Image 1: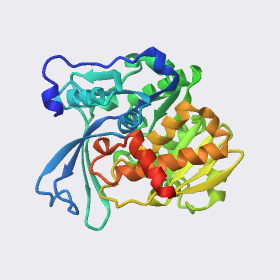
Image 2: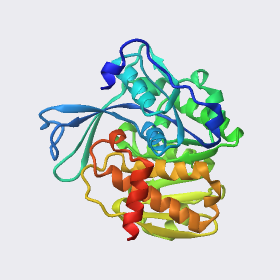
Image 3: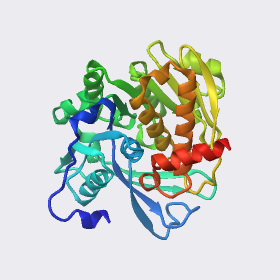
Image 4: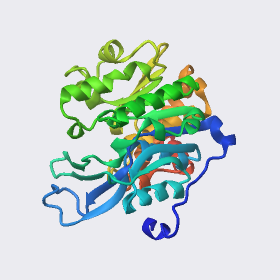
Length: 343
């Protein structure tokens, strides 16, 4: 579909500035995932691979747009067929891609990923370096960042220069413009030079975020092995004075939430899982879409619980289909699942 749509000049979608009151700008990596055509095998055993768009920040941008929200993506891909395909996928999903840049020398990043028979994920990345790592500060669309109601990012863009400095500069621009800063570390250890480097860099920008979403595994990693189910561990080691909301995702079991004023848990929505790829990104997009429309839910526990149930449903729908971007749900689908989960 996307290759055929790429004939002629690459089209860019320019955002209507009137919609920037709820704009979610996502910064970071977008790449091509190669997934085995059969499940439960190692990469070496896979008979063939199917390509799919990937990259958590880009997934979140599409997720917000699919829900009817306003979103944009900022990042770099190669000036190659894969890079053009990814830009077109964003355009087709109504994501503003005017902040994308194309590198003439480096290629679009590739990742081979599989869920083995033992349930463990196996990754093989081709980034030596890839275009996403080479985004420079001078290439940032500062006007687009300044329009963001929410500026969302991960930690993969912190791994190497020049992207690391560009990431920090983009956060500074967003903060100065009054944007809410949203952080999902999205730990991918195989990409980091060491566990120590990952822990240090991920935590280096921790205190700047207004909203953070982490998984139970990430709590264990970031705290050096502490109990991920302990409220005390989360509040003492991961909550910081400037934080407005910390959410711990628990997969099918739902999520926990922590603010300065209240904490609690919202149960998951039961579905039959087919592929968990992108579930966390769908959850984040559901939460950010709600936040972009109404920031008061950060201080209203009833509203926040509704928003988190909605986000849980976004994640649940995504696991019922293969792939991340193709499985991102619509507003109608999420509302229907939330309604049925209550009956």
